[in-house]
Image 1: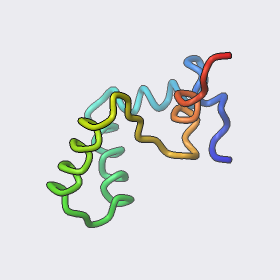
Image 2 (image 1 turned 30 degrees about the vertical axis):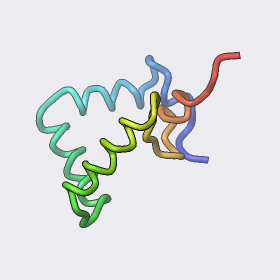
Image 3 (image 1 turned 120 degrees about the horizontal axis):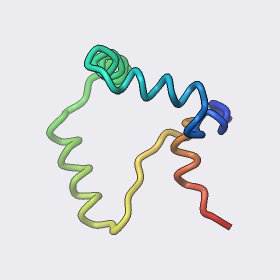
Image 4 (image 1 turned 90 degrees about the horizontal axis):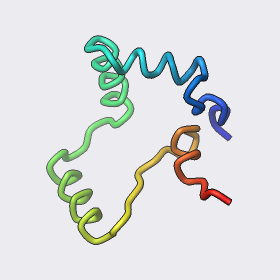
Length: 79
């Protein structure tokens, strides 16, 4: 489910493109613009408080997207 895991490999075209977009001000602002649209309306202060409370009460916390290959790779335990 989601994008191919290969996209999260450091030398993949998708990863290099993502790093290029995120490494400049225009690309970063575009990604933030898209994230803001997807997030919709919410209480920013309450959300920040909730996140900080969660972080303080858990020694390790990972917020992720279930379909993101980078997130999925971060959650895979080495065997």
